Image 1: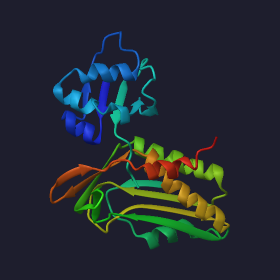
Image 2: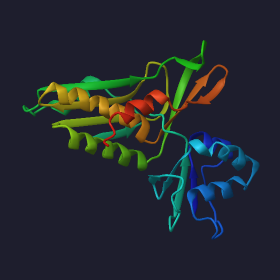
Image 3: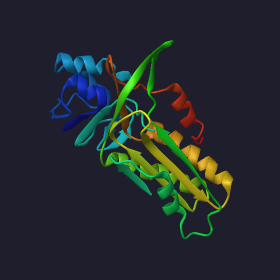
Image 4: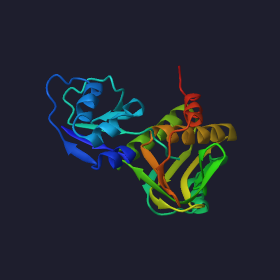
Length: 83
Length: 155
């Protein structure tokens, strides 16, 4: 699946998107967060603040407890600050 | 109607275009958001903002703004609605956002305008990066913005 990062999450990790292949034991977005955080010190630093992250499955905003299911794209972003 | 663009906009021309040719419109309200030149980092500590960079999520941003506009049309009897939001690098004093609402009567126009800007701030994927003399910092979310959006939630 493709994982996308925005704003300071992207800046901290150093890339805007990556293709990943998590194990079958990863079923929810929250579990994916734990798994992604172990990929590198940069991931760990970014996901240390995952409590305030928003997430989207296939471009639809969902809670972190949501099952990843068959989603092709998961996005992580800080709270929106538009307007 | 919604637009996400890098370019500036002319508020007068946009309002004229929004209302022209529709005699059912009795009033139009608008809100224009500008880049402030000060960033309050901590209490009593202010940095002068040199520029602000607005990042967004192309495709998803437009869909989010369309959804917000559709919700306003469901809640109030509106004749026309406009949201323009800029992205890219902006300077203090630059226009960031325009929300305009036209309705037969003023109550709906005032309420819908406030609803649109309140929801837009917390429901559309924009992120602000402020550049100051001491470096860059991402703007955090404001509890006040969450509260302003929450009062429009329907139980």
